[in-house]
Image (cartoon, rainbow, N blue to C red):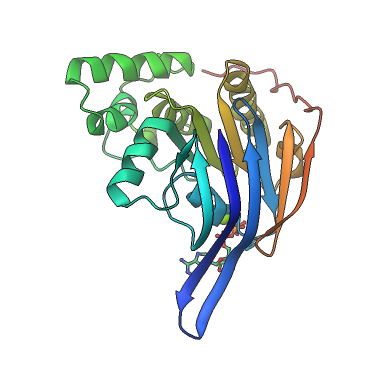
Length: 237
Ligand SMILES: Nc1ncnc2c1ncn2[C@@H]1O[C@H](COP(=O)(O)OP(=O)(O)OP(=O)(O)O)[C@@H](O)[C@H]1O
Ligand SMILES: [Mg+2]
């Protein structure tokens, strides 16, 4: 699904440059569930942005689903992003004036899906996230865990092959974080490929593979048996 070869990313220009990533080789097969870890500033978000075609590398090659994407221009990258990748962020990135289903329907606008179908698909995605009773709520009327589930529904509404999540549980208490991780594990079981940035060891422990960055380089890459944490028993409504 993903192959990075000798990827480097340099920020800045002239004498004031900084190598945020250097010589990154990484292969991720379809349906892997990968944690990307490392200290603050190690390059996790930079790598995530490259993987997500939100940014282009300074050096190296990137093949996504067989397509060489490192050399694509803005429009072509947007097309790849829209078709293949869903994003989830620490701060949810929901539009505050729109209700849950309108937020989820947003990516379908760029795909030219008709309004009635957008609404139906958004509502179905929210129902799948257990939010069928919160369709008309705005983000500020939802809990943190519910907001993140709306964001996950939005990431999935276009049926991407790859889900990228940058600290998806970073703003959640531990029991809500466990719910979100259980949800991601469920999506993995259904066939999705997931890469999750986290600096929390117990989140990384729930993934099938852990890739660790240090100063812009991969210093560790190991497969493991995931440790499942059962969400605390409480109503999720
Ligand atoms: N746009 C930019 N311009 C210049 N330097 C940048 C830019 N973005 C990131 N950097 C630098 O690149 C390095 C890697 O940043 P990155 O955001 O990828 O780290 P991170 O591992 O995600 O950290 P955190 O855990 O704090 O989110 C940092 O030293 C950062 O200061
Ligand atoms: Mg980051």
